[in-house]
Length: 149
Image (cartoon, rainbow, N blue to C red):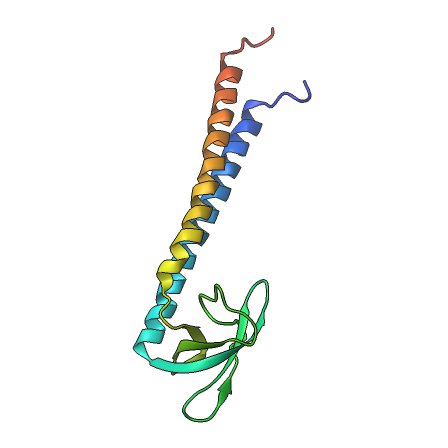
């Protein structure tokens, strides 16, 4: 019968849903720990500067700042925690003196990642949970149906 899922397809579907949700959750946790690691690196080799916001793009905010040695830096990955910045604005930043490409807006920390990452993980499981429940109920119905002779 076409269109009626069999036991194997439902089992594979459940594993796929569970796997995708687990990977998204793992990526969320990795993002939080990465932000914490970056903040610790900046704190260990702390430098402060005033930066000019050059561009605010969809995926990053590009800044430019000078270090005390007179070198101008513009981190290619942008500045960490750029929410609310506008092009042309001057902003106080903190950076890692051993790696000036690692810079964040002064006063902002990894805790700012918790809301968007937590929301992403929550919505992932709000979709995956009912979907897994539905697959489980379909498998149960399928196993209760009599097998045609």
